[in-house]
Each structure stands twice: as structure tokens, then as C-alpha cells.
Length: 476
Image (cartoon, helix red, strand yellow):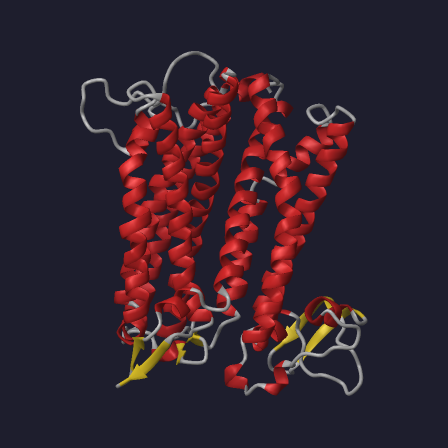
């Protein structure tokens, strides 16, 4: 297929499926915490706006959660089907970590999700609030175990290799490996930012359509506060994460900076833009800022860090890809800082809900958080190559013995099915967003009134014509 090898097709397939999957857990993490905050404010202030917003966003949470579960099942199977040698080699570490996620996070979420989605009028307010908090905690625990496993693959420790198989010797070191705290914090804040941008974009869209009410203003205001505070925190975490990566994966840093070699006595510039050429071993059309590269990465005026030429060709990540994926992530992060600062300025001038240029900007920034997450994952995963377990096992030694035909066929099937299934699910979720919050006393969390068990998607039980315009569309 297009001259690609089975290994390359396996990597593309995994990258494609995880790109779909990571979007939904990220929004799930953010929405779960947002729902906990909304219900807490409702119990505290007894303002029906918070109750109505809880019901509105819980429907969207239910759809998003369902799509996250479905897309996650495929990821688990791929370890056994496409990466069987990796599973045989490192399964004694990655297997238990994923099992711990099921035994803690998944069971916690499963135990309280039904109460959260369908128990608003069936249990006391305290128990319902507790259930919402437990679901939010469950999403964070799930992220913890997943990132512990992935971070161990980035910075492995606490193991021995016996007869060609990884044997755990220190689980504390395995879980709390050097990159784990930074990557967990970075991903968690990214999830909150992505959700805040999603919520803010929906509020801005409704305001542009003339749907100006307390519900829309409240969710717009809360989203902009989150962006204002979370974006600078993310920049700080990113800086610390970069220092950690320079220490443990210097080749990745050299690749994402397009840095090939050091000149004696000369500080490393920051390459703003350019085209790293892996064959010519240089960055073409480079636009550089003197000293800024070493200031950011070594926090010194004349510091240096290894260039790509210090590594054998077969040990170099693809600088062309990670150079640009990293800049997409950073560029969107700068726009998030701008959005938060602009929102604060307009709030002070009492124009947050009226400035149409700002509202359009906030609307267009809606998918920015998700795109930044994808760009960040491409940077960290492609930047780890050619290793699947950094410095321990190469990716080419981890893939199963499948033919190019088999990998091509399954990849095409995945692409077709994913775009159909998740395209429909995403369209339905956006239709729910387009309806806007309801202000009546109807409880969307009642579920089936005949006592039958309800599924998560039942929380979003409205019958929506996928092709009919929303109320806001007609007003526009």
C-alpha cells in the first residue's frame, strides 16, 4: 500500500486509532470535573442556572463517554494483534498497569455513572453529588494508570531483563518513573483546557446567534476563567517537561528543535520556522533567534545540548514531523494565552458577551485544545522513535509478523468504520450543543421510567433530526 512496509502500516494504524480515542477521554476528564463543579455550585447557591447547565452538559458527557469506551476497546486489542512481540517482552509491566486501571478507575466509574446520569430525582442530593465526584475522580485515576504505563515506555526503570523478557523489580520506580509526574500534569491540564475551549466555543456560538441568556453567559464566563488560569499553568508545566525530556531523551529535543550540531563557543539559537531535512542533515529555510534555544532548554545564556548528528542515523527521530507537530502545539498554546488575556480585558470593560470579534475567535478556538493534544502526542510518540521502550526495545522488533496486505486491509476498514461511527456520534453530540441549555424543570437524568436498566447514551435521549437546523440556526 503506497510502498509502505507492514511496520509502517502498523504504526499508522495505531496512530490513527489512538488519535480518535484520545479525544474522547480528554473531554471526558474535563467534563466530569466541570459537572462536579456545577453540581457543587447548585447545592451551595441553589441557583437553577447551575442545575440546568449540569443537565445540559451531562447529556454531552454521556455521548462522549460512550464513544471513549468504544474507541478504547480497539486500543487494547491492538497490543495483542499488531504488537505481539512487545506484549510478550514488556507485558509483565504494561499488563498489570492497564489491569489496575480497570480494577480502580473503570470499576469506580461504572459503579457511580448510572447514579450520576439517571439518579437526579431518585437519590438524595448528597449521594448524587458524591457520585458525580467519584466519576470525576475515576477519570483522573484512569489517566494516571494510562500515563504511568506510557511514561514507563518513555523513561523505563525498575525492571530487569531475564531470558529476553522484562521482569518488574520495583513497582514504585516503574509507576513513578522520571517523566510520569510531568506528563500526567501536562495531559490533565490539557484535558481541562480542551474542555474549557469546547464549552467556551459553544457559549460564544450561542451568543453570536442571539441566544443571550444567563445560562449561556454563565458557561461562557466559567470557560474563560478556566482558560485564563490553565493556559499559563500549562506553559510552566511544558517548560518543566521540556527540561525533563532534555535530561532523559535528548535526541527528541534535538529533533523537535531541528538542532543538528553545536558550534564551539556558540549558544544554540531557537529555530522558529524551517524545514528539517533528514537526508541533508540540516534545517532548510531556518528563521532563528540567537541564544533563545539554550535559554529555554538549559536556562542559561550560553548553554548547549546535543544535536542530531551526535546520534547514529538509525537512532534519530523524524525531525521533520516532530518539529512541526511541536510548533502546532506551542502555537495553539500561545493563542490560548491570548484568548484568556483578551477575555479578562473584555470582562473588565464589561464587554465579554458583546464583542463579536472576540466571540468569533472563541468559537474558532473550540477545537484548538483537541488539536493541541493530538499534536503533543505526535511529538512525544514519534519523538521516541525508533524505540517502543526507550533505549530498551526498538519498534521494528515489537511488531507482529503480519503481511502488508493484512495491514493495508485492516487500516482501510478502520478508517471507513471510524469515520462512520464516530462521525455520527460527534455530529449527534454537536447537535446537542447546538440546542443549548434547557431552562425548564424537565430532568434528563430520569432515564427509563419502567425500572429497566439504562445505558449511558440514554441520558441524551432527545430525538434529534441530524439534518434539521437547530433553534439557534433558525434564529441566525
